[in-house]
Image 1: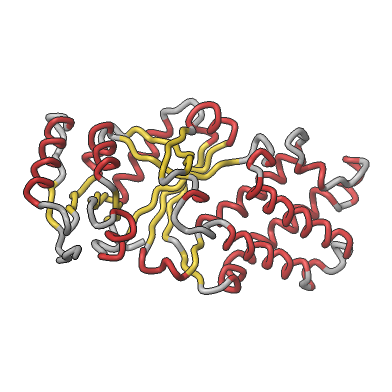
Image 2: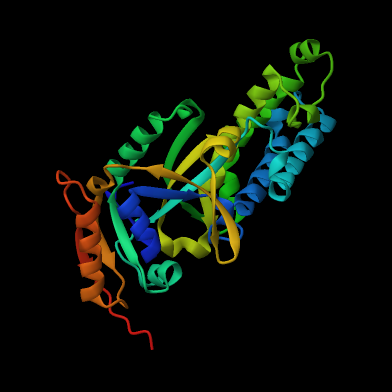
Length: 320
């Protein structure tokens, strides 16, 4: 990503949390604004899986019954995940996302995320990532956390996603073949029971290998959104964390528009150093909004810290 700065559109309440508590919240992607956030990628992954299983590369390795078993199991696995989170094996991962825009300022983004009455927090991307990485490393469960950051890829159709995920899906299929269907695997297990490997109560060396294959595949699910959201120019920081650790140690809940939303928070004591500036919505009373932010920054900023600059919106809009 060429852009050094990323913008986070937020409400006044969330801005107070960021500046006062020096904390950022990351939300499960299933609870974000795109109603088909994960399903779009899931459907494409399944189509890609079906395509890979029908290619010549797997001829001579997998029987038709084995192909069907692989496809059906992954299909059911994804479907049950959407209907019942408890279906995931205990050592699988949860994902939490913090969204930004690479666009400096956008009227559409003001309308979508602040109802034109909020703020933009502009971060230095590299400084923010470094602070998040440092914060996670200090936790006892750091080894069970992976941090991803990427630009969202907007796709017009599942075909686009299929092309982009084919390699990792192919790796998954070959990994499953080696774990379940080679003579060595069958001899070791004495039976091939692919479905058993997905049971939450089942634990084995093969299961861990299989889960790691799924981790790699499913990490791609946060990369893709429908082209409808292209104007957001979204950049994401994604925390991938062991689900047991998330439930026991870090996952919290808040209410939003009548829904209970799971999230995690990350403490960043030096967050002011990563903030380049704060922008004020075009609909707010600029003098009061400006004064309020500056007082908040002075109250909670350390003497050694550089206080972020505050600016008014460069856009003009009248909410008539």
